[in-house]
Image (cartoon, rainbow, N blue to C red; front, side):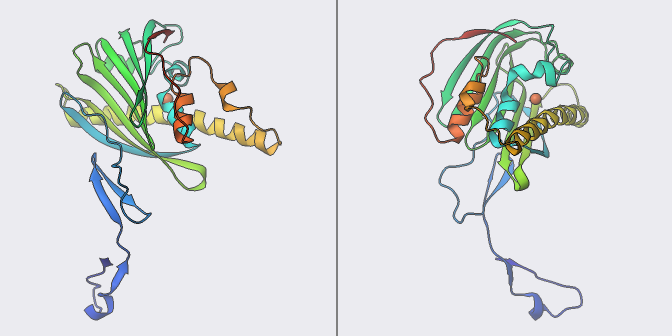
Length: 263
Ligand SMILES: [Fe+2]
């Protein structure tokens, strides 16, 4: 139980009773997890991907007015970066043919992209040379991860975002930004990356909140949305699976083959 031990000028007897109920907590992945539903869940919270090389880490937090599937799909959809983050991450007029494969995880789904090479966005040019492969990964109940590796398998950048439904239709975003430890002093890299990711996050928030407003406008007009499957294109590699996982539905059998995409 939480207990107030001292109030200046007051008698200790007045303030020594239990004041707050105890909460079950667990420390994992650099975060404190609190269970508000009684005992701690048997299943441990999803942790960030373990890196084979030392990483410099910091956290950023924010919130967006949207649903959990929309936030996760937006975060992990590689094809929105050409428009929402044009120039920062990718450019629509500088696409390249790469290979992608979607794989089921014990608690989620991931897309693996290979043959990416040199990226056109200036963030990648600053922090990567040639990219070997990358992943977009969703793990239940709400961890969305993007992982960039070089051709030797070392992680250059790993972004792990825990997405939690919050009040008034908002999603709370708690993101762990991990970058490869190199010659650049950690404090300087953090200053640069914090500014860069604030811009990127604001771009995503804007498109997510526009989408939410659009859905609400249709609902207010009495127009129900068509079935979600009709809204997905073959390039939505993870979105339909994220929605199935969050709805508690089984994933379909996934082909053991790569597809070619223009990313
Ligand atoms: Fe984005």
